[in-house]
Length: 481
Ligand code: HEM
Image (spheres, rainbow, N blue to C red):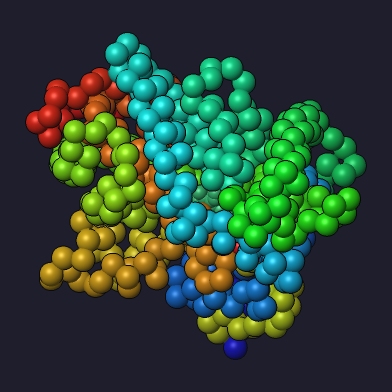
């Protein structure tokens, strides 16, 4: 049995450890490079904290399934989230997590998704109108920013029962403020010490201002939900959204702690549901635009599933989009938007042949397994078909899902995954049914790059769309870069 000190890893400096080698925006790449250099189990240091890197997907699966008892979210993560008023199901541990998780799962179940579909279809309809305008003008637009309007509107509708309609507003939106949160979370989680408790830098003061605005908006939503429940007591036995369910299950009026939990969870939903889905869609569109055959198949599938419609008006359409779903899986295999996840051992553990003392922080690397030729043929190549269970395929898709785990695994698996996949299907089918990509590229023409800001985003991309030459199922040759 090895001890952590016996593990290989990059040489740390006194005090800062390996912090100097970890640019926050490329931290995941630094860890992935170490796993290539030192193997699937290695160690490094952030400040004086020792972190064990785990890149073996089988070991990661075991760790993830051993929650919440064996492993927890790190104390540092929990306190950073708490301090910002973001404490909720994502950061909570133990009993608090169990209670919150139950409420969240109920609000995201298939029954709620089904009854939410008409509202969701309205949102995709508005999004179709927005992209029709862009296409009519053949003007380039910021792809990420547009997709985040879509994802925020969807989450707000489902989780809070409100129609933000940021898609049709061109002014300042809640995203403007949310967008400042992720990079700062990242910065604080990777800081060698909690500097902001002693000295607030301009970015920390800006973060406080943005947080104050979103908190105020969320508190207003909670008050409205409280009023709805007071006006219609029947809602208490069948709440129509997450906010109402949380008020029924978690809140005792006037209880400050529970108020914090409500606000924290509402913000958690906005944050967890915005960038993740939007960035996955950006990566998907990026890959498709570079693979004309995939793009054509997506268009043909959308034509067949949607018929005369421009976008999905019925939930059943989603069930007919298998190739689109496979394209999403393949995108997430190559570009998991959460490429590194942190856990902390609650008790002494053994990972592989290494003894892990209680309290050790583990960084799980989600991508190395997905790029391992033992699990995926031609692992670097973008091949959505590998996710379709076709006769003669090397392994069933279900087995591969245990290696590529973009939504995590075990009891803390992403509760928004069905919603996310539905959103991805709706946007992808709407895009390829109606439009062709005239150009897609970075602002400065440089190759697309990965930037970690809590989730892994591509460099900002601008896209130009044109209306597709009608009904043939063919996509005009693209000039996408
Ligand atoms: C493509 C889109 C998405 C991806 C790739 C993604 C990925 C993830 C991952 C990797 C985790 C950690 C799972 C684990 O610890 O095992 C997670 C957790 C979570 N996600 Fe997602 N997610 C996506 C969309 C969403 C959406 C749309 C929502 C809700 C609106 C959401 C809400 C959450 C929440 C609340 C958690 C914390 C769950 C817990 O700790 O119990 N996610 N997600």
